[in-house]
Figure 1 (cartoon, rainbow, N blue to C red):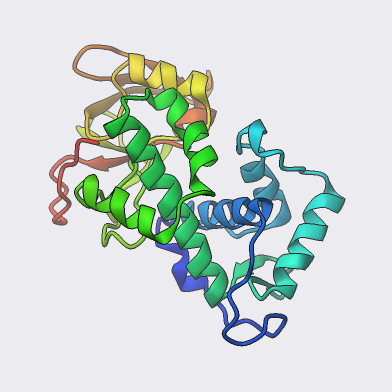
Figure 2 (figure 1 turned 30 degrees about the vertical axis):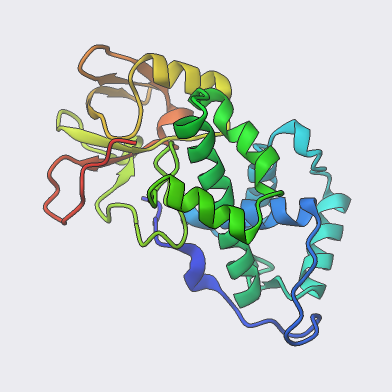
Length: 260
């Protein structure tokens, strides 16, 4: 089961490259790389080039990110020179202290933007992620604070993922659906945000964070999982259930039931 601990524990001190006290001037592409590295870490995965490529490919096409080997290698070299990342002994990518701080800032602005377009502007979930990517790069410190206060200090994005700095952490008993027990009441905690078609299916079947679900049948030989909600019995593929997180209802760990 993937570890859902906060990625900030991976932070390393920069080994040079950036002048002490100077704030890196990030390009939009570098901001997207920081966002992607953070999200890979958030899944409990080691940030290898392969995992980074997979995450970058989930970025909206409008961001114009290249995922060729030379393009990625060049960006990682620049980020290492800026003191944003280091490479471990097995060439894994790790955020430095500065890199972690800036990555958390980007993730926070992205998830606040998702909250804003859904809660304030009424945008549907299927389009929130793409629109948030367009907005996140233009949000200043002041605007970020205004959004946070106006939305009454949200702790998660509409997809259930924690907003850095909010003080909220996922339920420690949470797991992906493919690791969860069959026939027990579960609370849907987090859903993937990058696939509009998948989101439309999830929303149409009531599979949104905060609802109660139950696994009726897990049939790995057929590659599907059948769930039960109050109003439907949706069927999901194995590749999807490995990206949806659930938590036992009344797990006894002090986790508040959230409806996001």
